[in-house]
Length: 156
Image (cartoon, helix red, strand yellow):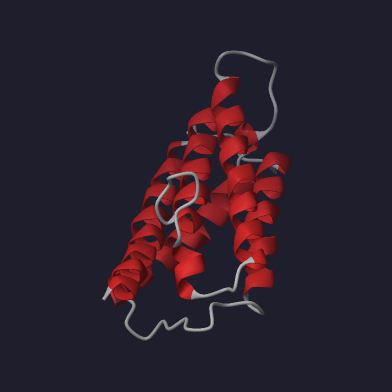
C-alpha cells in the first residue's frame, strides 16, 4: 500500500507539473472561459489534485531503487512528463488561443491533461501505491473530462 516518507521523485514531478501551470496563469488562452465547466467534473478534479499532491509527496516508494524491469514504469513516466513539458513549450510559443491549448500533441488528444495524468498513473504503478493510483483516477476523471468539455465547446 505504500511506505510513508518523503519522495524526492514526487517533488520533481510536482515541480514539473506546477511550474508551467503557474506561468500559464499569466498566459491563459485569450478566449478561456470556465463558466460552463461541469461542477461534478470540477469536484473530481479538485479533490484529485489534492489527493495526488499528497500521495506523490508522502510515499517514499516513488524514490529510486536498484535497477530492475520494474524501473521501466518510472522511465515511461518520466518520458510522459518530459513530453508534457514539450507540450507546454509549444503552447507558450503559440498564439495562446483555446485551439492552441487543446490541440493534440504527438497524436495524444487533450495532451495537457492526458500526459500528466498518465505520467502520475505510471509513477503509481512504479511505486506500487494503490492510494496514489486511486487518487490519479479521481484526478483523471475530472481533469481530462473538463478538457474534453472545452474541446467540444471549441468545435461548436
